[in-house]
Length: 406
Image (cartoon, rainbow, N blue to C red; front, side, top):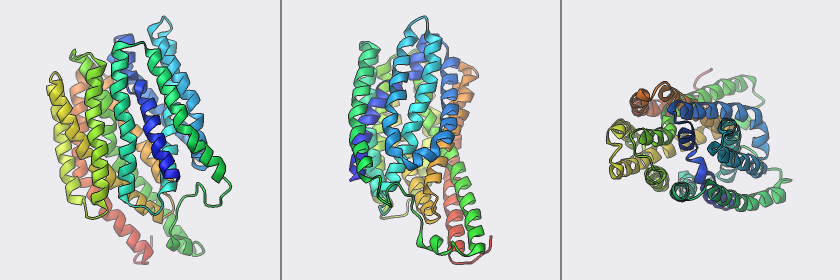
């Protein structure tokens, strides 16, 4: 039941979050006429997400449904802060926007992933793919409508629609929380019988700690590498304004193409991952995606071609995302650290985005190097992802079968 409520929440909340949220960096650029300030906003936003996640993680782990409800307040505050960007108080608006937007996203990312984890303990990749599809239905509709709103209507209209949609989305999950909160198994991380049986064996307990740290570090590094793509949408959006394709609706069409094909790809990849080994496909898709990203800045004035390219990139990226997520969660659930893995995944994505935004913030001439860095790092995952999966599989087999002492 909770998974169905989560999928409903994902559609409406992602719609609400992205009507205005997907365009904040562009709004700041238009307000300040500076790409550097726009990218600095993105860097500070990521740094604050890292900080807030560290502060609130333990609380979010216990009560993720409550944090999704609390999120309404920073969501409302950053939406109102955006209205200040068109006034003499724009610098105050930027400062408030970066604080409250980062807080709102922190209260979304980890709690949604934790609820999904709690709701799918015995489900395969197909459930993950379907849930991602629901999530990006909301993103797609928001980006298209948000782009049209910002091009043709006052910003406050989009803000009212966003806040109302979010409130409707979170109420069912909050009701479910209050009904189930006294259950002994509610909001509990999974662990395997093997690990539980080793709890009273000192040497196995020490091995468990070593294996756990290695797993979490390895998956942090893998996600740091391929989550450079999480910076791609903002990088492209600002680059389009640099080359004079200044239209929120143009940006929204490209983003919608990416997320539509990413959502569809997640659904298909989830079904395939339950039936076959995707390792070779993922390696090929990493290389192809990296090549396409390096092409992106050179066809920026051909919006129709960008729409097609980003649709292809989104589809290829979905396979890599589903593959890594399913392998990571399977291994980390065995060791009872799937929640920590989700936290590490989110933090790795933020540091990765800081790297790309930091390159672009130096000077507008660094846009092209930022695109190339994104493509090259992502293409390198063709080697590192399969290598990591083989190494982590071997570690767990050795641990569970007592082949080695760590």
